[in-house]
Amino acid sequence: MAGNAEHAVDFSAGMLVAPTQLSDWLVIAPIIITILGGAFILMLRERPKHHGYFAVFFLSLLVIADFLLLAQVLEKGPITMTMGRWLPPFGISFSVDAFGASLTTIAGIVALLVCIYSLVDITNTGRRYGFYPLFMLLMAGVSGSFLTGDIFNLYVWFEVLLISSFGLLILGGKSIQIDGALKYAVLNLMATTLFLIATGYLYGTLGSLNMADITLKIRSLPEGSAPMATIGALYFLAFAMKAAAFPVNFWLPASYHTPNIVVSAIFAGLLTKVGIFALIRTLVMLMPESWAILTDVIAWIAAVTMIVGALGALAQNDVRRMLGYLVVAGIGAMLVGVAVGTETALIGTILYAVHSILVIAALYLALGILMRMNGGKSRLSELGGGYKASSLLSILFLILVFAASGLPPFSGFWAKFALVESSLREDHNWLAFTILLSGFLTTIAMGRVWTHAFWRGGPIGTQDGHDAAPLNRMARSIQGKLFVPVTVLVLMSALIGIFPSPMFSIAQTSASGLLKPDKYIDSVFGAAIEQKQSQMQGQTHIGEGKEQDSHAEGEPTSLEGVVDLPETKPEGAR
Picture 1 (cartoon, helix red, strand yellow):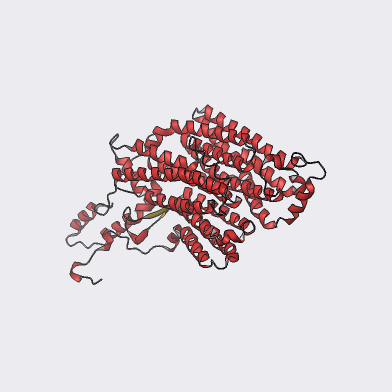
Picture 2 (cartoon, rainbow, N blue to C red):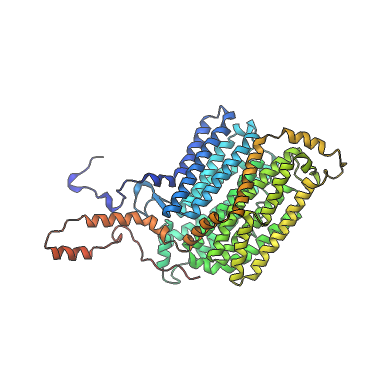
């Protein structure tokens, strides 16, 4: 387009003119890698046998990018990249802090290990029907949700992972899968509708979708001038439905046992944690006053969710359905930290999210191996002889039982320790008791699984001494690739339990950034402020030195005239 020299446009008034640093591209690298990886695999649809290996390659790149991004954030603090180089809050921003970077990294590691497992478990038919492109698209949605700094784009990334999850859920076309997908779809579509409605109300109230700008605008609102409590309640309901909290938790155990075990592992490990992440990001960081109003409600929902999940697991005979209820119980434990609201409580929630991603995914993968040894059966009455068939699997599964129950020295212990301690400090003794009771019931439920599947000689109705022979033959046919991901996940849980300091440090940085998001806000608006200051310092003033000094002293140091940046005020009262 031809320009006019006499009326040149000053792009610096609305755009960042400084070149983007190379390290800032790490913010969107996970999304670029997963989308390009899925597109590349889709182009190779005529060669399905290579899909899994290319997926492993792209997910390995994803893990490397995630680690580099996490290291950058821990060293320099939150990082923001705004699309199109528009000045925030006008452009779409990707903002990543320690909270988002740590969950993105853990999610990438689990996705890579699940993909390695899938090299054996996914059939050629599953590859032809697009398992790996859908898997990569799912990871794009998960990564985008953890990294976005725009609340509407959080909704968009939710839709991306939701659409891909529909495809993965029905892959195979069995009637039980269609039934599970219907329950999964109805509740999740209702949740996304509520999410969209709440976002519309929020935009109508504040006129902004940028998370950092929303935080500042809410601080500057006069008390009672906007329906923030209502908007916060809508967000809580939407994200609680996605996370499968009581009383809208029934869709998860009714659907997660229906697809391929690999799909169940990635769903149970990651998708509900995206809901918890969004709930914490929205209520704790953006709307602290709404959060304070809802804490009692969240506390009761957390307690009931834990007990319902633990009792549901105890009542099940099908191990796959039992693991679904364990996911629900874990969501209740994470909500405890949100309800208590102290830094220690949020540290416990973040630690529990990391622990749950690792351990739940590992339990599903270990169960997949056990089912292969038992001809695809997953009911307790049909399991047995597992120790004779594979002592390695029995040891790995027992460690996962201890970790899921919150017993030392594994990752679940420190998360529950932080949650119990923070509950007791804030005089929520009944919440601490509920956490311990849920852990006790989980220990009984999972101990029952290990006893039936591994300790006893064989399934009900078989004779000891002869029942393990078929299992031994099937165990020898199991490929070692299936054991590698489970072993790595178990080792990660053990290392976090034995050496908790690094993960505690990351969780503390994450919790502190959520409660005091000034560094997050500065990462969004800091570059624009520096640009404005640089422009003002570079202006030439004609006149006497004193006059120049007086002008210099009077120059503004904010984005006045460029963006409406409210004065920073203390966070909402707790």
